[in-house]
Length: 258
Image 1 (cartoon, helix red, strand yellow):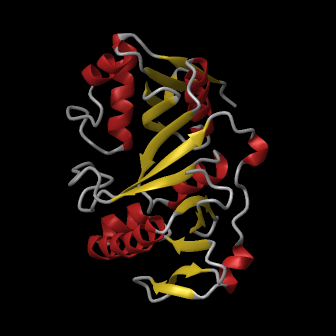
Image 2 (cartoon, one colour):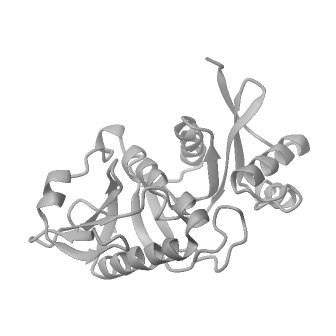
């Protein structure tokens, strides 16, 4: 197995490589990257950090973070080859903790189940804000043709790994009555009778669905949006994601921070 090394990037060549890597991930021409090199240079100069993970000499992951309000950090972007996401996020975590941060926030597409599972179940972050069409129209190869809803996650950087959410309450979910139907006609959302948990399903692979059937993908966007905005308006937060694509939303006060 090739050794993985990780470092902060400051030099022109290193930042250019990170810019190209993000272009490849988001399927944009390298002449029109989602995060131009001059922007990354400016963020570093303003006190932010660009971390890069290498397998041997090959760039295999990168992230960008900036300091926010006192005690908070914002992760602008993070992407990595399979299996290296934890390495990149833990590097951001260590950098932020060294600078006195207690939390880190970032956004992601709530329809991408694998990212939800990584953020909520593996890292132990919580979805704390649902943003409707956050960026407006996007023209990259991953998001083109869709509306850019995003879920803000907040990560307690000081939480011990023993508190990470590794269970998904699948039995409770299956016993709860359905409240919404998905575009495929199957239950989309369930709510327990105690009104403490809501579960919401996302499609198996929204990226492939968006490329093959964009109209159907948009129907999924609107259906999931309805569930999330209703639940978040009632004080719920996203606290877990199962392997079979179901979010767990937990009402604030049931072990979920504001």
